[in-house]
Every structure is written in structure tokens, then in C-alpha cells.
Image (cartoon, rainbow, N blue to C red):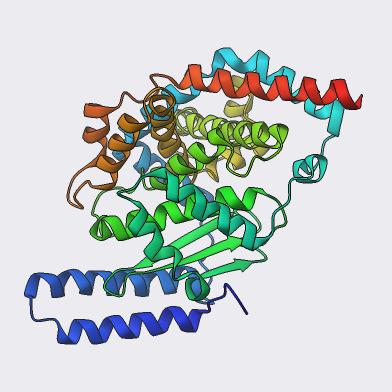
Length: 387
């Protein structure tokens, strides 16, 4: 079958890496490759094995979130700034949500409504076309990954679990320089943006392999996928339906806004926990509901949202949106900054880098307002033709 790989294919590359390590004579290089091997075997354990992670108790979850909230407070602050920067858009967002519900109901398929479908081959050809025009310095690394597509790319029916699914994943093994890419199987034209996103990861992995094994918090690791995806949406690669494109941008913004809301609530929940002497009895739940209007459903959703899952995407989105703002005015400058980001050494903390070159959340309201306004405009145009 075309575009398919299995766990056995992944394990074969790990075995090949072991042989490379055995022959390596440079002590520093050998230590690095051993780190790659450890990381790859851990990925097999976490993502490809049949072993299921044991459930976490409610108290353990609160304790872990409290620990993360203290240790990574600077990242929580960025997410909080993102969330409160968008508060003034709530009325406009409500208007868009009302139009969506009025035209399409509670549940709808934007691909079906707009007829936005692509075959796998067509989506791949558009992905190749995008990267051919994106940046000449990055093109050879994209091409290296793209040429492996028949043995390292697959389209799966479902990625993730019932609670947290994914449109795509990329798993890299340095030494053998292989990116294993997993794309959720769908007819929707959204797959081209998922492919561009995942090949953004693959390109970065080949451009700066050691960064994939850095010792930092990895909370900006989605920038290399989100930024080219944003550019593809902005330039509308494939000339897709404008309503479909507007919805892709809008739904992404709203998803991250809702996740940010859940993460902002962590501080409130933890303060209530502390006020209740770190007990999770009825008094704790009553305090949350009475004082903060946080019921059991909101509480569960907030505690199921984590800094190192949803938070990573929000933080990466914040940076990618600033890059996009620059890109709209000066493509060369934006791509230079993007490549500087891709080139950061594995031992360097990313947050100081961004503060030097990019002001996080500086243009979030400007860009978000454009996204919401474009969504409303496209809905009104659709309504004028169909209602």
C-alpha cells in the first residue's frame, strides 16, 4: 500500500541506529546518538506499545498542576496575556457563533458545506508546491523528507484517543535521519494544511536535528509546524473555498482561546484548593461553584487541559501569529526570523530568544480581529447566496 509504515518499520530504523552507534568512534557523537536511541525507544513505549498509562487520581492531578504552575509560571503568564488580549473580541465571536448556528446548526461539516475535498495525492502535490515557493534554504531539507514519503508517511483512520485526538504527528530518529509522519485519514481539504504542518516539523528536524533532542521545556516545539501552516492558509494554497479557509483560521483561534481559558482557570482552582487547606471535599467544590462559578464540568475540563499538551500549542501559536504578522508586511524578514528560530542550538533556552526578536502577544488582537472579521464576512456572503 502506498504511504504506509508500521511499528516494525520504526523498530527497524532503531535497530539500524544501534549499528551506527556501534561503529561510531567519536565519543561525543556516540553519546548524542545514544541519547537519540533512548528517546526513540521511549517514544515506542509511550506511543506505539500496547501499554496503557494508569489513571491519575484527582489529588495527584491537582498536585501536578500546582507544581507546573509554580515551575513554569512565566509560560502561564504568556497564556494569560494571550487570553485577556482577546477579551474585547467576545461580542464579535458571539456574533460569528450565532451565524454559524443559524446557518449550519449545532453540528456541521465545513468541508461538505463548501465542497472542499482533496485526494491524498493532490494534497501532497500542493504541499510540495508550497515548500518549493516557501524558502530556498529550507527546500533541500523538505525535499529530503518528502522523497521518503512512500515509506515514512501514512494516513491513519484515527490518531490519539477518544479524549484527545490529533490531525497529525511526526516522530523523528536522527542518525538514520527518518521522519515518521502520521496523518489522520480524511477526505477534507484540511489534510493539505496538516501535511504542511507536519512537513514543517520534518524539515526542522533535518535542518537542525539536535534541536529535536534539546533539554529545554519544548513548549514552543509546534512553531515550526504552525507557522508554515498559517502561511499556507494566508496564501490559500490550492485556491480553496474562501469560507472553508476562513473557518480553518477561525476554528483554530477559538480552539486555542478555549484552551487558554481552561489554563487560566488553573490559578483560580489552585487558590481555592489552598484556601480549603488542600482538601478536595464538598467545601472545595462549593467554594468553586459559589465564588467562581466553576461547576464540576468546567473543573474537569480545566484539569484535563495541560501546559505540556494544549499549552504547547497556544504558546507556539502566539509566536507563529507574530511571525505571520511580520510575514504579511515583509516575507524576507519573517522567514529570516523563522530560520533563526529553527537554528537555535539544542542547549539554548527559547524564551529569551523570542524576547530578543519577537514581542509575544504584541499583535494578537490585530490578527485575531482580522480572523474573526473575515469569518463573519464570509458567513454573510454565504448567507446572502443561500438563505
